[in-house]
Image (cartoon, rainbow, N blue to C red; front, side, top):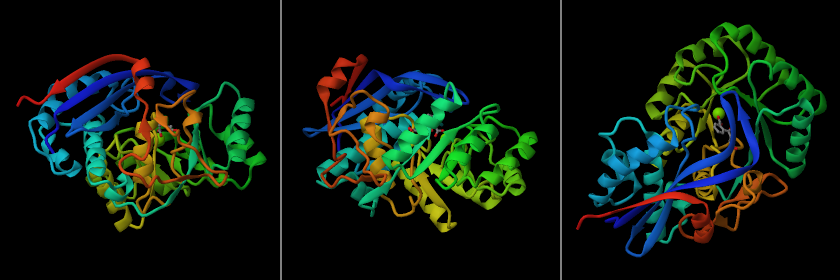
Length: 371
Ligand code: OSB
Ligand code: MG
């Protein structure tokens, strides 16, 4: 496939509700969308980097410049057989995995459309439906949190994940467990604790949490192994797993017992599949994380979640939880059993609505093949 043009766009999209984590509050998303064009087919990728480098060291502005000056020119000079060719093509550029993933995933979408296959099938997916959970941000008051949980439990979501940080943890879990003793409940600290907090974190063992996500430093899995030895609850690794070698090292060390796979965090579908496979060899369950994606990234997450070892509910939930109006048709919906049906039509399985994208585009740039 000789890609003829790559269009970069920045979208400004207000979230339906502000989302607060231990590292900050997001009210409007600034999102880099890439569109690759080849032989009359248009395919899409979404860069999940945030507005600030607070989740990881990437942000939309670094992703834009790396895509424009390094990655897109390499893709436009190449002839790729599939998305699997992208990691090698981008190898000289160190890091910038979220930027790489946006382009690589668009190439996978392109290949799926060309072969008239659903993206899920091309990735090796086997599930027809995927189990869904929700991630609930830190709220202004405990009462507001309780209302949110009630809404999501009633909607049928199979797992509730609470964002937490010092001061919004033990007492909150206590309240939630009093009201809902039996729901699948987990928490995500986004690196808000240190090893010296291990006695504090061990107190949560009594809440029967499914997992505690990334309690310690974003770049650590050595001290996570020490913390995992000191607590009963399973640790789930998010930020610190950058690739399948990290996954192998972390699982050898015992840094955690569950992995959250985010395709952007690991640099694209090829590496996401590799992390999935390593976890499977270790008998470790994985689930698909979310980064407040638009319908494009959400469709990619649904396709990835159809792989066999995605056995726990992911943070892949309905469009309406994030957006007044999503940029795909139909929008992503979740059944009353808390599942999403994996689309069976070619490519993403959703139509990208160009008018809506145009209306919220605040900058754009087109790069073309030279010959
Ligand atoms: O750590 O999983 C995370 C959102 C932004 C950055 C990091 C994370 C999250 C979420 C939200 O938890 C998941 C979602 O609903 O998209
Ligand atoms: Mg997380």
